[in-house]
Length: 125
Image (tube, rainbow, N blue to C red; front, side, top):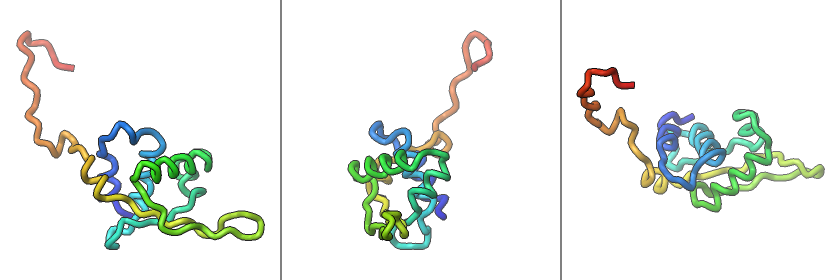
C-alpha cells in the first residue's frame, strides 16, 4: 500500500473530482505498490465497495467517471466465469501526471504565515 500516493490524491484540487470518484481514486492510490515503477493496482469492485461501505454500482459508476475524466486507465479486464461473475479484478493505472499537476499544497506544507492578531483584543475563532 502506498501512503505517499494516497496523500497526493488527498490534496488534488479539481472541482470535477469530488464525492465518490475522489474517494475511489484515494482507495486505488492506497492499494498501489509504492516500489513499482507504475502506479498500478488491482482491487476488486467488491473490495472497494466493502472498504467504503457503499454499493458495488456506486463504485462502478465512480470508476467509469475516473476513466472518462482521464484519472485512471483500465489496463486489464476481469475474466467472467459461466455464471457471469468476474473472477479476477481489473488492473488500474493512475494518471500520475494529472495528479501531480492538480495537487494543491496543504497549509502545513505551504508555509503560510499565521494570521495577524485581532486589533480589538477579542479572541479569534
